[in-house]
Length: 340
Image 1 (cartoon, rainbow, N blue to C red):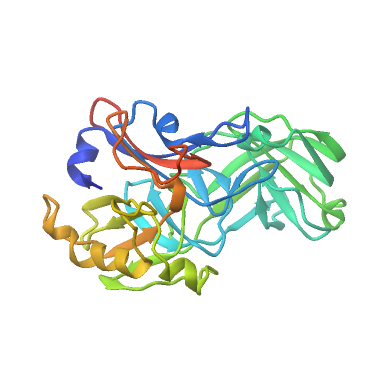
Image 2: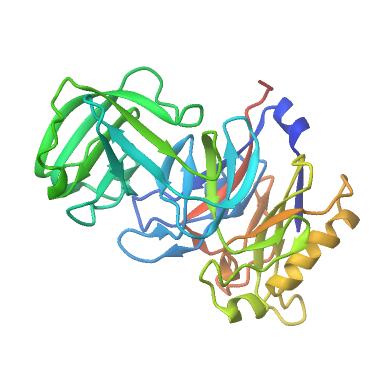
């Protein structure tokens, strides 16, 4: 199944791409069809780790804020200007104190790992954490805009300096920067004006939305199964499974959402990653209005997770005997009902 989106036309019509995250009031998992809500279309998103809480295996950005930090796997990202990128992203973040000292930040929404680590928490973190334990923490309130999708550096005021253990309570436009003993004596005091910066190279501009997967399967129009670089097994790449993928044409004007059913002998056995990449790089033009193929493509979670929703209906045939599987996140195509 293929959903084709003419991006310039879609943007003018108020159609946008968004990532969705399963709520944490239960297991942190939900069906793609539920996450889709009234979306025009949706597919399942990233791989995920079971645990308390369930976490996606790679980066997720929603409305400019990082939910999950980047890891060495490819992600689809949407810039603040609507541009699309498939790449392996990195985190370059830090706190610039009132005296101009730069304190590097290593993680997002995760417990500080050691004496030399700083983590920043945003309001999404309290969905799966209620307490932070660290040697020191700085509670920040945005001064002016708090939209990361249009700026990589934000001004903030230090509201509190906390130590050891405290509840995690933040609202949009607030952050907590917490760390180990190496930062306990930093000269940061309530009332200070500081800068918080966050970049996600190799993209230079801000990101509005992003969802991870892996591996990249098409690069510059050629089949490129990059499972080794993204720490995925050879059998994962070569065995046939149900698959979900996203692709972008060479001009960046057309986005493709693709699902392939599998594990159902007599109906569909699925595809290897090479077969999926070959289809997306050479065959999509035969089935789509734009008559173009994918120049860049990314594999998402597959297997029993593979799900495509169009117009509030699951249009593919999920492989689990119990039907549609619950997942951690999803990629949605939504309509605001009007253009910019």
